[in-house]
Amino acid sequence: MTPTGLIRRRRRSVLFVPGANVRAIEKARGLPADVVILDIEDSVAEGQKAQARHNAVEAISSGAFAAGELLLRINPVGSADFAADMEAARVAAGIVLPKVESVEHLAAAATAGLPLWAMIETPRAVLEAGSIAAAAAHLPLAALIVGPNDLIRTTGISPGQDRQYLLPWLMQVVLAGKACGLTVLDGVYNAFRDQAGFARECAQAAQMGFDGKTLIHPSQVQPANDAFRPGASDIAWAEAVVAAFAAPDAAQSNVLSIDGAMVERLHLPIAEAILREAGQALPDDPA
View 1 (tube, rainbow, N blue to C red):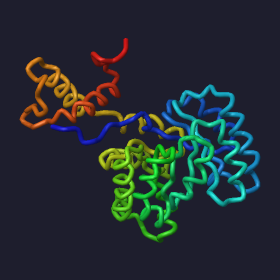
View 2 (view 1 turned 45 degrees about the vertical axis):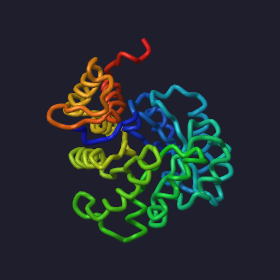
View 3 (view 1 turned 60 degrees about the vertical axis):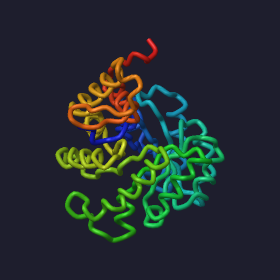
């Protein structure tokens, strides 16, 4: 049996932290989130933008975060804060750009030379997801993030049970991102006290091919890490694939029968990535 998901990178848990909330920033330092995004956009009132920007720059410059990546979500292209935000973002590992609707929006933020994470959160953005993702060929685009809250607000839809009316739009973004080799992240789950609902949505997102989920509360970090790591069946499949292609008589084989299924050699890198994600060392890995 082949695994249900593609290669899962270490962007399983991506926590938004309000730049205006110094206490939340300090708490985020020790959290096991794969990525922390200091936010100076939606979570910050207009009158607090400058202070939030200052807080974010100080926090990023000081380091001491457990997260593997520390990013800054700035205000949209064309906003009054965009120029100052771009200057502040130079200390971050990347820029999260909201309200992206075109390649031109990406180009405006690419001048800093930092990896860009584009938020797909309007109807036009969903329709343009393919061209936005394809810009990774000439711009430093690293990830797509869906923004379901804004999609729901701007379209007036009711998502329905298990997001059934939202899923077609989400899958468009997944396909666009995967076609261009990008990380694709699911949007936030607002009811942070609803642990069962959050777990269901994480499981759904993993099955859809998302690499991780954006978060709004520290309590969501570990459940997201658990949801987007390889499961026991994925690990068993990967071990079988690696072992089969490592056999001496398989050296010239591009296709093998493994547990009653045909597996191509092109699946070998996927299997190896799953095992590395699970913490297993491979023979070719550096000591």
